[in-house]
Length: 509
Image 1 (cartoon, one colour):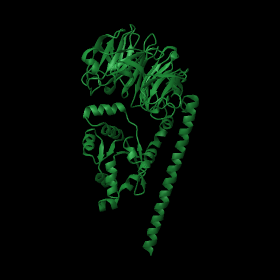
Image 2: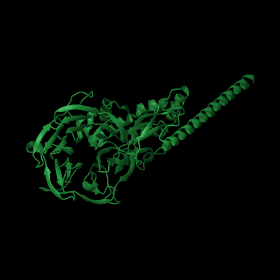
Image 3: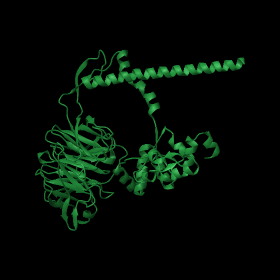
Image 4: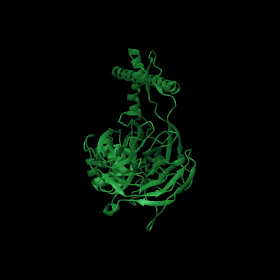
């Protein structure tokens, strides 16, 4: 009886200590959260942190552009969907490629919808098939690159077809134009990814005659490798001092040339650069499609600032692609998966940088939010898995689908595969609710298909798996390619062994 009483006392002591630790941790979290909320409010109001005894310095930081509004078109069949290219023309009219409807949408700068157009007269072809980028010449004419039709099509500002531009000879059937820009003489420069071994830049005079081509394909491991070679060049722009900036997308850099194609230098970017633009104070805007941001650099490559983040709210991007500027200095960014063009503007007043902390108390205030990282990470982390139908079927066959429903797991799949789970309930688990469809980068899918030769549906799953870090499948081809890409692979047996409880491991279920 004494031993039993002693054991019960120890158990009670442990429970009290555990409860005390929970209360202390919760109190600490609430205090830090209150400090963070106050600091956020203070910063939004005064544009600096509430750090005592830290004086302002004379150094001024460039405040990033601010989100103003979005353009998405009217409701119904003319609503903007999956915009890629954007360009601002005469009178600040905004031209956008709608890649789902394969038309050009036209808006006033305030977002008022004007019209759409796509009709061409090119032999038996009567309409654009895959419009990508847009550029506007000095007369206001609209140039649209179409990769499927392998040409650049020229329209009046009102959308009336004028002519097409393409290289002559055998290259006409294989080139694939993307980004475009004009020099002061009206010559058109175009990035071309049509031939795998010849990613390059072509130039045409105002009459459409080819006058220059340079570059070929090279996949750089280090940033400085293979200068003058490209791996999926995309955006292109020319500065007033006649430097040619080319977004070397999959080499994660911007390369700079003279107008004759001679390499000059390169700019390191934060991710995969797509659209480029230069403003009237010689700042270079670079759209980073996978970081979901726009970075601003000097023309020499020094980063000035950046704006945007991943998400679907105001000021957040999902795979932005192109950028253009109007005469008022507003910034137009095509936000592909949010189906809109976002408009940003520079703030009127600069931000003052507070001085660096000096005393221990100041450093403690600055670093106190870091205390939130471990508990928030422990509370919020959910491991992401990309899942295929055969994996779920294999789990169902051994009555282990309930393992998927644990709260620490987040299950995703492609938009093509997800309908196979919609409305399906197995062992009390609603697979359509548990597993959610996920968006992906179209360029990453195409790139993977070209590099590995896999089918499109397979490439989509691999791209999603690469982002999530884990892929669950019984398919041997997916497993082999996924392993080569560094994805952690699970079949149903390995998943049960890794994450199943003792009953599942013992029974082999």
